[in-house]
Amino acid sequence: MHVNGETKIYAIIGDPVEHTISPFLHNSAFKATELNSIYVAFRVIPERLAQAVDGLRSLSVKGFNVTIPHKVTVSPLLDEIDPSARKIGAVNTVKNTNGRLMGYNTDGEGALMALEEANINLKGKTIILGAGGAARAIAFTLVKHVNEIVICNRTEAKALELASELRKHTDIPVTGKKLDFQLSSEELDDGDLIINTTSVGMHPDIDNSPINTDVISRNITVFDIVYTPFKTKLLKEAEARGAKTVPGINMLVYQAMKSFEIWTKKTVNVEVFFKAATNALERQ
Ligand code: ATR
Image 1 (cartoon, rainbow, N blue to C red):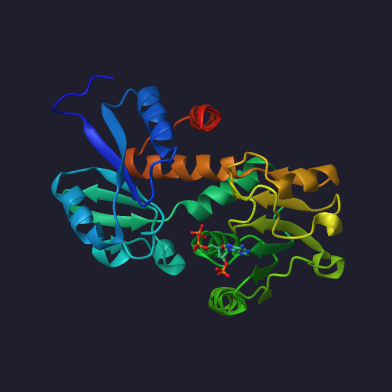
Image 2: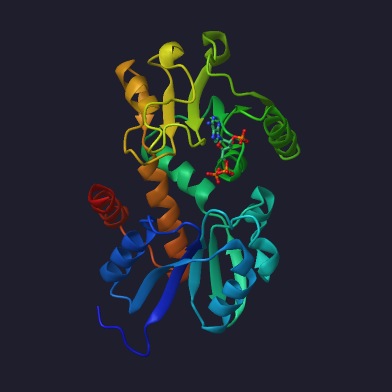
């Protein structure tokens, strides 16, 4: 890559951000498209978010990703928010057009594409574990595709709140309840898809699973958005019980591909992102 005066800069802001693999994904895509652009990671502490966003705007950074803990608090600092990101209440992608910052959320779309790519039949009941930012993005996207949603969260009030918000946008049954490790087989009965959006099972918590997998049958699909480790305990056990599984790296890759499209209007073969993500995770 030749960095010169015309090189366009893209970034990710978060805290912590040291272990993000997004730079590997986007820089591989810039290479594949031969765009004179680079993507860098900036640690931004919450107290400096407003200054950092203004700095990115002033320095003509063309686009940036937003990650933990800024996905919600960045919204009021932007000039415009895409309607679906507004509904979700979180932004993970910002495009800078001549100093005007527009916010998007590609997490839900990334999850949907990961499921579609794995040929998962979405016409059924979906159980979402968690009610945080990722759960919101996924729920607001999937509500247009599935026939029923159950939100299970450790803090029950958040599950009930998200379910009630979702019901304003759909006629399908949506319920919220407390996340119970002993999710019973009746609760899973006619359940078709379980999506884990909690951090349970994420490195270093690799010996835990958000639910007891004894009740998982071969007719269920389990999608875990956690991608460190590549195969979480939940996915391993679901697979051993004959269930279909979708790993979190797929969502990571598709949300990155969508951000890249928003910024550059170019579609890169998803394999470029997959290869970069796999290599980066192997190196960690
Ligand atoms: P993200 O943006 O990744 O969704 P988040 O908004 O902080 O992150 O949400 C984290 C989710 O993981 C929440 O649903 C959280 O449950 P609470 O609302 O009860 O906090 C869930 N979570 C985190 N640790 C958990 C644990 N040990 N057991 C069950 N759920 C957990």
